[in-house]
Amino acid sequence: MTLTKRIIPCIDVDLDEDGNAAVYTGVNFEDLTYTGDPVEMAKRYNEAGADEFVFLDITASAEGRATMLETVEAVADEVFIPLTVGGGIRTREDIKETLRAGADKVSINTGAIENPDLIEEGATAFGNQCIVISVDARRRYDEEGEHYEQVDGESVWFEATVKGGREGTGIDVIEWAREAEQRGAGELFVNSIDADGTKDGYDIPLTRAVCDAVDTPVIASSGCGAPEDMYEVFTEAGADAGLAASIFHFGEYSIDETKAYLDDRGVPIRL
Amino acid sequence: MSESGRTAPEIVVVDYGLGNLRSVTRGLERADAVVTISDDPAAIKAADGIVLPGVGAFSEGMENAGPFRDVLIEAAEAGTPLLGICLGMQMLLTTSEEADHAGEGDAEGLDLIPGTNVRFSSDRKVPHMGWNELRIERDHPVFDGVDGKYAYFVHSYYADPNDERAVVANTEYGERFASVVANEAGNVIGTQFHPEKSGETGLTILRNFVSYVADEASTAD
Image (cartoon, rainbow over all chains, first blue to last red; front, side, top):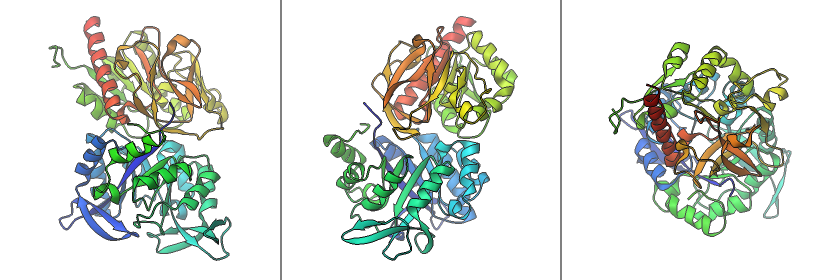
């Protein structure tokens, strides 16, 4: 046997009206719908065979951050699988307190784009394995990129964005992925603004380009609508893990069902 | 009190650095151990069992573990069960290529299980991150019931013990490597994977370890 492909449910945590942690699911990073209590959801997914969890703090506030750490503690006390926590991580201190709360890895997005040295600092102090660099890629069709892919007859490059895709950075995702790896990222988390919430499948050209550019494990994210999409991202793009939110949260497909589908088709999976 | 009427064993999780100690603590507590996270050599010495966790780099880990070095070696030689996890396992060996690469070839491991930690060759993705299968090679009570099960790994180096008999379990990642090692007496144990992150399989291992600690403690009394 060999290393298995990982199925990772992603849980977006916000505060509800009473200030409690709550899970929301959105489309194209917008239109969030309440889908449940994060700890209950984590327990349920653990029983269903999730290989890992990603928790994203989408509150972007100090209270949100404190609540998020309590949620991480509560989840870490209940489930014994790897937990990645992201959202608003900007400093070495943020990394430390998140790991202390019970996270195994932190996912850093804007914080690393604004201050790439944070990757080295984090990797040196806590180990590469816990520094996940997350990138929100957006397709661009102009001539300002460095690496182009042919998609449906058009030349496309992928730009790293911040603020949930609302703001471009001009940075080519492929260059950024290589730099993040060199600086000590232990894993790359590749989101697509174009595919997010569409359930039309992952952005395969994007994921494949990142997988080809680096040796670090890649988690594909955004766009998963069915087990077939996971199959495609593993076999055609070479992703190491597939992340999904809404298909699991809304009960359209279960994790078991997704794993059985992949296993039947010869994808190595932990059953 | 455990089921057999023994006192719950006292296990110290050695706090020598940074990272997630919460999961391993909760996992051991679920198995009815009394767990203390400590950086006090006296507490480590008095424990029925010791867990040496670890994430990060070898030389930094050894440096941070410096104050506990003697007490860990003494306890291990006295027969106290000692479980090293991930970097904590690699620290049980003599040395690591990782320290050499960093230009710090003098970083010495605890040498409780003679051998070297070597890096995976670059023809595969490194770190080896994710769930992989355990194949038990040598009977050990802590690993009862986990042959063929999956555990969660995150590492770029692996243990290469001098004596093949130190290998308790193997795992395949491009090549076969030692995913569990133990000394001849069996009280010094290392897992390359994270039992505290390996779901039910990991919890089984932690439960087995707590029972093993309780058995050893009652024999020693």
